[in-house]
Amino acid sequence: MALRNPRKTRERLLKTAFEEIHAHGFQGMRVDEVLRRSGLQKGAFYHHFGSKTELGYAVLEEQIRPLLESVWLKPLAEIDDPVREFPALLDGLDEWMPPAMLEHGCPVNNLAQEMASQDEGFRRRITQVFEHWIDGFEALFERGKAGGHIRTDVDSRAAARFMVAAIEGCIGLFKVEQSRDHWTACRSQITTYLKTLGPRCN
Amino acid sequence: MALRNPRKTRERLLKTAFEEIHAHGFQGMRVDEVLRRSGLQKGAFYHHFGSKTELGYAVLEEQIRPLLESVWLKPLAEIDDPVREFPALLDGLDEWMPPAMLEHGCPVNNLAQEMASQDEGFRRRITQVFEHWIDGFEALFERGKAGGHIRTDVDSRAAARFMVAAIEGCIGLFKVEQSRDHWTACRSQITTYLKTLGPRCN
DNA sequence: CAATAAACAGACCAACTGGTTTGTACGTAA
DNA sequence: TTACGTACAAACCAGTTGGTCTGTTTATTG
Image (cartoon, rainbow over the protein chains, first blue to last red):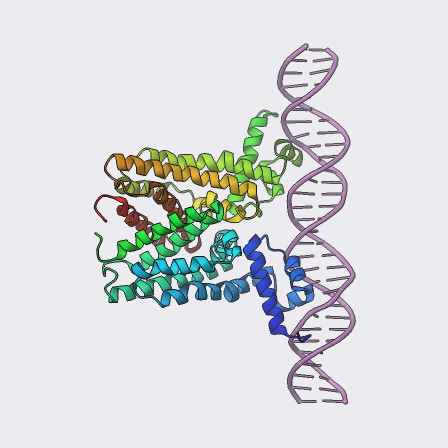
């Protein structure tokens, strides 16, 4: 490694901070611990970030957001019939999940529930991330309508928002119960809800 | 107030601690601030509680659990046809909500998402609380089956677990977005899901 | 090559935090 | 009324935490 590489240094701080925030929450994350794990000093940290809070914002924008993109939005963009294809998407996601996710849950939701009412800067940024996620589902449902897989009288936005809520709710329960079976049972109800949006029912 | 009233002193500590935990999370709650707001000293605190963590356990058992009981379980026990009566129950709940709940969300879920992976003692206790909540929904669905309002092939436990997950998910989103409209839209999808359990839909 | 800015190292600090200790006043049973 | 455990008050403490400051080395530009 080159002795000076500001981009990599910054990236290393961000990655380590992401892991620490995911593991202990933003308030529980310690700057010193991030530094220790990164093998860096205070000087490096406060050269790249103005404060702990600004680091938090950067982690959300530059680590969590891209993760959401690759884990959820890209796969969502690749399917057309949610009722039929989404369950399989969930299955695929399931196996890929690293242990940290199983133990600590969804990084977006963790930050959201911890910081939304603590810091307006966080709240605004997290809202944007959620809205972006909802956009993905909404686009999928609109595509589904065009393809005849979703009833045209469905409120795509409301359904999309509920999908995100339901997913976060299920993950949140799993984080507490740590039970594969409960997770599977709870998750399958999302599919049950999805069928509601299809042409058959009602 | 009598100069010595251990029961009330303990209760005051618990109530203030509950508010502080609800507002700032367990890790964000400061013992000194609870003491300041209670008008008490360290001596009082560590006479009634062995540690900050034990206070947290006590808040969960003696404040949050009873709150869940009165806000959710009692109302649930009083209805028989979930598909028809649950939406009205939600409406009633909606108006009653104090500002702190709107701002900080569900105390159970907050503690859950923050502490489940941090402290095994918390995780176990929170699991019990969630399980108790799920029991309430399960009993309701079983009653619904008996009354012909819920299909008998429905997995009551899975549906009950999903109800809790969906509710927490919706509340979690509301906490971030702080939008009445989004909340209403998201919440109405719970009703959509509930209809799935009724006799009509397949 | 000189000058200047960027990219750090590392010592330092004030404020805070959970917890301890010691002392004391109150309530109550004998 | 006396004796003793309970219920606190209040000073104190050691460790931690985010953040600052000064200095030094590396890259870049004129």
